Image (cartoon, rainbow over all chains, first blue to last red; front, side, top):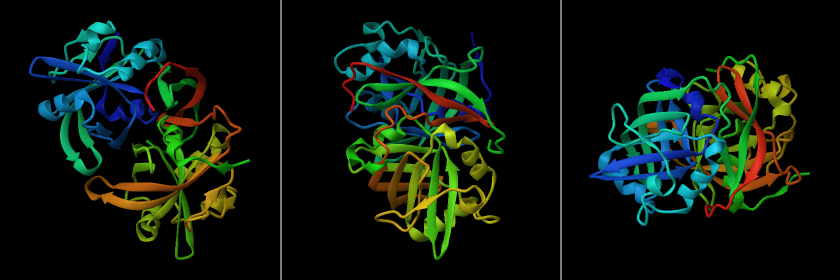
Length: 175
Length: 175
């Protein structure tokens, strides 16, 4: 059961470096791409930097719409995550091909992926063209908060993925 | 035993989103800071974007020297990682205070942390001032390659850390 999630806690979802699925929509076309090159750059409102190359089909949709959703999968979705990374929206509708269920977002036109435990509705607020970086503000976050320790996927290269393990708690003063 | 590591494989160390220790040196002063806001932006030469706020003592050393090392700890170092995050180089010499052993780097003046399983010697090649982003090129990488599945730490916020779990291999065409 996904619920509205406090924006000032969004950094905790992405700091761990999960593989994400970025969804976009423009002019009747939708796409989803697999992505690992992202980082938090501001706590609140949450702002994220992420690299999307113009070689990706999603680039055009993101560029034109100025919106996307960052969907965070757990390892149960591993096969679909890799399938999305191995194919291009130029050739197929990945939502259909890999049976990903689309949900309507509340503030953006890009769809959310129902099977992902967290969905972040984002707007492009800036670009760093030299490095293909999009600066995204998270407008709305939906999270299945029953999942206390989501078993997210983390790419080590060449199809090797680390799966999130145990959780420890330390007396940190960091946010 | 750490060995010279191929630069085109460095992305696999950082894509998973580990907490890192950034070391800097300038004019006889050295510092180390705990950091989670970083991402790969180029495969080879490996280029990394990372956020260092001017509120951090390390900022001045990084700004003036134009160099740093990214040291990747495993969870055995958890107490020291958190201690580095909870204190400032303005007040103490963290290497002394937390018994971190310094190694000499080969190409930069900042020290490497011996206890970390991987050390990346980096040079600042650009800045994105608006967001406090430093663009770092990795000049040299040292990795303990005997450690096939390093149990890195991944911050979930408020002192909660996910520890790297099991590894799975999937037929990915991604690098």
